[in-house]
Length: 630
Ligand code: AMP
Image (cartoon, rainbow, N blue to C red; front, side, top):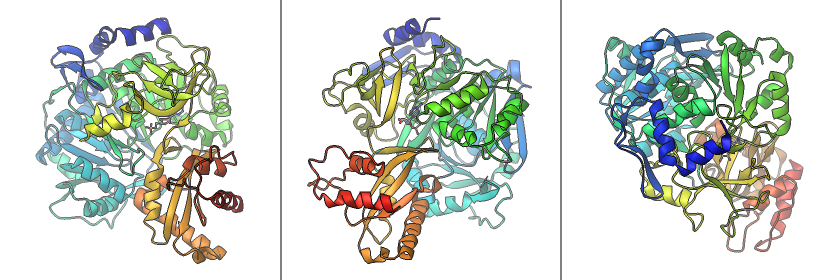
């Protein structure tokens, strides 16, 4: 197939194109209308069609694949592997769905899932889908206040958790943080269901609210829960993501559009076949985990691998051992993970038979050329950088091995994916950027199936955050990009105050608010600076109410420790900044706006750029001095 023709049709004959793709999934009732774009920027795909994500991911495969492994959960933390055939997964999902229903969870109700990478987490997601309930998975690295904000936004009927996770051989509390979050939340759930792994013996229980996952589900071991068919545009899940304000945005995903988008992507983007094995090293708390640990591979009848552990434990060969053991054909990881492995002995890559592997896909952050070259040479299979966002649910820019694999250009995530009409816009003029001219990457609406339908409970924020940057109605990615003469795109970083640490998206405003919670802090600016391993790291510049506190080295070290602890307490270890610098003044405009881009440039040793609005020139030296002193 020819990429250009394929892409062209997908954006000029959207209804024809997606109408055909709709045939890839099971519809209880076929769609009456492929696309309704009568209220832009909102759009509805497959209107009137009734389907169910769980049915498509599990039940549909029972006829042909009942005995095939559907889900393999490998933990190098607990040294346990649990494997479920499609038939077994079906049984487990039914039992859990029955237990959820017994707790009052029904269609449209929200269920927060705050869990480590264990089978119960994935089974809970599928059980929600079966009931037409809306799950909201919260990444386990987030702290209690962060979880509380998400609970209050989603107002869940049920929260599912575990006693603890494990990281690097040590238990990490979950239930304990859930208790704290429920205390902080205004709308705590009626019930908390706990998968007890025996990792936290001291876990206190709240009578009447807390229930044991295994015992409750055992009561429903033989239950059959009929699938709840939902209209294509009804929500399947909410996934919170950082934006430019302190409050995270609940990305709302539909059902039918998402199911079709994932089914098609397994063919055209991942070039994978039913019966094969996919290993995605992300976490179910992120969008990549939702789409390509859970739903995508299962909808496609593949075996999916869920891995709990580090890429370097027991040694740096563990992922390649998994590839050999399970004959993985399709692997999906992140540039940071590859950079971690690159620092290890390359012998680990040669130790295992990797001949089953056809592709390695990477996403979440820019893929630098040395990393890309290293892993391509080491594996001898195409390494495919593709670009997407929580909002889109699947790739916006990619190479398409299932259509036509164009030659790789290092540093480029390829071309506009089918379904996405992508342009690069000059920020000042709103006109299309010339080839090689930097601009903002946008998508011409309607967004294709799979992308967010709105911000949960806040249509206005959806329109304002994503569709109001330009006069023309365009979805803004908030990423800078260029397109070269041959049509390859390059992503040049965010246009807003969002930073990307090891592929995790963090809002600098959220971190600033957490730092501000320390009573000694007067003002604060958080910026992302380049980091060899993680792509970017957050650093903090803070002025103090009483600067004498940091006159001594000990005083400074102590306060830095306290500020870092504050961030971890408020947001979780995922947001822990690399450094805290104490300064006497922060570069601001005369109207008091922080000059974050100048601060970032100075911190990276670059030119601070346009300073025409700078209020106090001394503040620049303050930043330079602080970074220099380290
Ligand atoms: P998230 O919503 O957490 O997946 O983060 C999305 C952001 O990560 C994008 O807006 C980009 O800034 C960045 N990103 C994702 N994939 C890539 C990629 N392949 N190359 C460069 N940046 C990427």
